[in-house]
Length: 256
Image 1: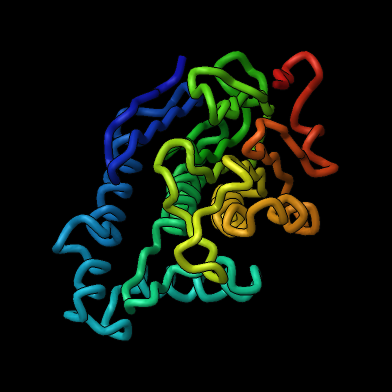
Image 2 (image 1 turned 90 degrees about the horizontal axis):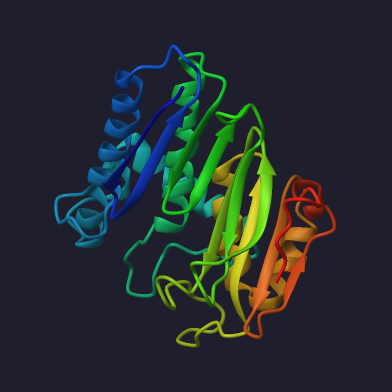
């Protein structure tokens, strides 16, 4: 028995599942209300959001809400940690925080469920996921990594508990990630890079930065404490970090 629901928010499907038997619809509603608030604050498509007003120079960064100021600070920290490959600030002076907001929001939603005492749950937004405990079968959560060339196929299944996973790529949204050191040049040597981290915030921000690095991104993840990665190049060849196989029990691995 579990509480599970999917809604379209933030321009993407968001799914919340709580396995703990005492969970109620109200627990789901609180999580979805939080994502609605995040969308109202950070959407680059809604003219009333803080980010949109910031991008129209109608709002100063110093006058933004604490959430927006937190994201700007975390983005700058991530930029430093990735030697400049994670950059939400565009040459025209506008800001696109989508590469960090989603993972941060999923992690925060998971923390809300933690605070309620729930031990077994799954929160996903647009393919980025944070899990706790076990699924309805009493097993680790099984997460599939999609084939970027045939999206109905799964190329790898990972087993996760108390962790986050995020994938960056061009196969759904096209060339939406840029290499700040090669303006205007698309990233063509890789098509997908998945990162498993201690939480989805870490996985999401470093997956975005590593993808911007192209083929060198998997080496960056290899050197990153607490994270593992799985990269697929334009020829369909997969490269994984040395510790990635710990999440792929032999009976569950579905290699290309």
